[in-house]
Amino acid sequence: MTKMYYQNEINESVLTGKKIAIIGYGSQGHAHAQNLKESGFDVVVGIRPGKSFDAAKEDGLDVKSVAEAAAEADIIQILLPDERQKAVYEAEIAPNLQPGNALMFAHGFNINFGQIVPPADVDVFLVAPKGPGHLVRRTYVQGAGVPALFAIYQDATGEARDLALAYGKGIGAARAGMLETTFKEETETDLFGEQVVLCGGTTQLVKYGFETLVEAGYQPELAYFETLHELKLIVDLMYEGGMETMRYSVSDTAEWGDYVSGPRIIDESVKARMKDVLTDIQNGTFAKDWIEENETNRPRYTKYKQEGADHQIEQVGRKLREMMPFINEGKKKVVIK
Ligand code: NDP
Ligand code: MG
Ligand code: MG
Image (cartoon, rainbow, N blue to C red; front, side, top):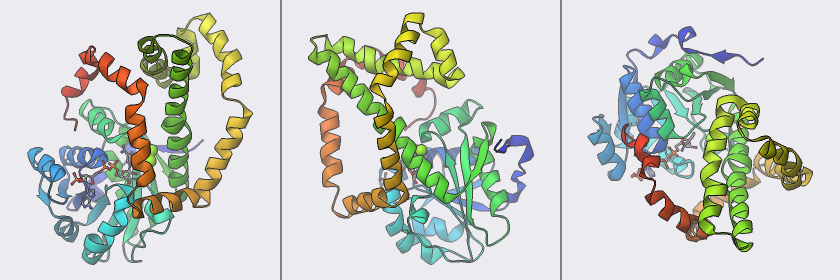
């Protein structure tokens, strides 16, 4: 079995006296910066002037420009959108890297696909939480954590591995467990998961389920509850105890329908196309297309985003959620941006 690393086997003193720059203050950035600070580490946030800059100040952090933060830090964690990292790295981070510094990521995209090429005299590693940034923060505050992967790409100082583990402990990930991987494995599996199951597969499944019911004449509000709202409740059960617990909790009729109809919907042909998507990730086709989409100002991304927002399931959902303010109540108790 793969070795997991937990709290008590990690010595965080390797980070003592080191300054950590968190570059970007978005989903992951705000969580890493606040969690590390509350874990007792020396944190500076590097960010351009604007909304995030103001938010980081309001949250009581030491906030500087990207270049200044990179210059004064020993460890530089880049938590900018993947497609912006190369430009910011080249203009503001690379000129401020000192031999023996550590360059960090939360996803291997830019290293794995050759977008960022760091000098040989710095450590390069990643600590990638397996969950959204807002949960990295929320679970930390609750005394829990989101598990994380870590990987070493370059170990110039001989300390890279210890630093990665200590960083993971600092953001709360070691409470849930840390697992060692490579940049290649992290990048490819992360892209596969989000495209095939977590985001792409799930939204498409929900959308078609909703459309099938509405086109058959059923009420859209009912279709929303059936295909989107209830999905969370089912997934919570899977999260708690696997498919077994979910199947224990639903009726035997639902469980029988799961066995006989599930494979009619998601059949072997779907698995064959999953393999095609994986191939496009592995051979760089997906990365090349996404890099080009950004270079041409995101015409398709913008169109898909608008189509998604205009879909009937979103219009119906917005109205229904207004009547269920308790859905977001838990969030207000912790600092969520
Ligand atoms: P976000 O999109 O949430 O981060 C946006 C931040 O980057 C904002 O603070 C924004 O500032 C800043 N920013 C954008 N462009 C620039 C620029 N040109 N110069 C300076 N600052 C800029 O990113 P995520 O947190 O989603 O992703 C960060 C990394 O973490 C990525 O590598 C991602 O793959 C990885 N990751 C993300 C997860 C997630 O939960 N989202 C999960 C696991 C890994 P402003 O307000 O000024 O626009
Ligand atoms: Mg992911
Ligand atoms: Mg991802």
